[in-house]
Length: 173
Image (cartoon, rainbow, N blue to C red):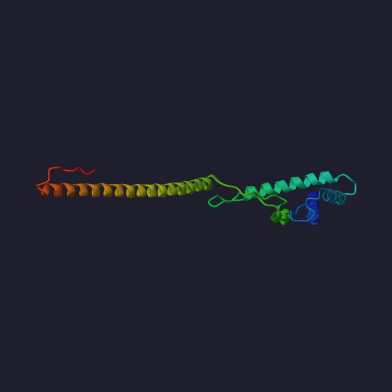
């Protein structure tokens, strides 16, 4: 069994090293002790210390994550080249413990901006129409009052003209 393969198998035994939900995951001292144990299990000569094993694991983990990202496709993309990383099958066990940050694309952002802009324009248009309607109603009321005043004046003038005995015409305004 190769050293890398043995390291992967040993790490699988200790969820404290990779399971973010493990109760002791944040306990650095315990994890350092586990790394020392793994270093001791890897060889009896003391060639690998806890820090060396930890660095090797970090390298493996990061390489595996890059491998996953490189082979990840989106709708409409061509299939990946099919290049397979030699340790991907062994590292697959850890995949569900690690998550990728959500990514966004320019298309989504443009769509969101357009939707936001449409909502804003729609709201502004409704307010503008409501303001126009209110202004129109005020204008109609003003025209109605002016018309009523004119009708009243005309009626008064007509009534005075109809009486020949009147000597004074009073102006109504």
